[in-house]
Length: 305
Image (cartoon, rainbow, N blue to C red; front, side):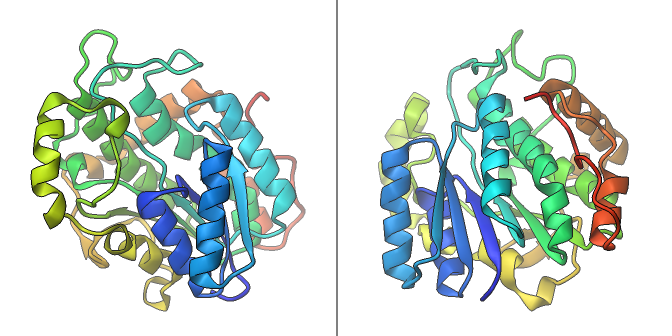
């Protein structure tokens, strides 16, 4: 990974931090995104210390806010002349419904819309750096997810587990649709299940059941380093060069759920997501032109600042 630049969202703890450490240890210039500056600075210091790398960058953004995601994209583009890997790792679980600054349900906004928007805003830079990779962290929970197009924001009925599973299904479908749209650009898109990992995930608003069960099951969960292994593999391994539109677990290709492979629903999800974030839907021709060395056009995807 020497000479490569990698951006990891949710990179201040858990799987994201472990992935950043692993990739920096392989020689990559690692950038991490976190919502708290003090934690991001501490994480960057940890990455530098444990990887012996001085090339660690930190970006601060609350990715549940679309304005913050857009600002983050501008900062990344001004910092990196090339971007070889984007790892969409940020995510969360909330037992109770919370609204974002944009008035959207937080789980869907952070887990799906944030990576959807950030990826689109960085696509031109990724294509210009091709071969490049977009790696998105989903979950085995996607298999129980259903896209409630009539109530994506859980306004009529909310369940923390249903909202989480829906967002993880959206991650898989987004990846498959992205891969279809990026054919010929040199940018690949893969998605993964990291395994159930020993982190503080969901601690901000846990269901009572999980509070009781967590101390009992915690010793049997994966370490963050083990949970990050598939992310690191998909970001770096020559074995998956050119592999796109695939779902992985334990560094192996797996079958995702039947619902996740519904291309018509994936296309609908893309259009709905683009509308929710105010994004144009015609970036692919421009991406292909850039990846082939053609004239750079004004904006792969545009969103109102």
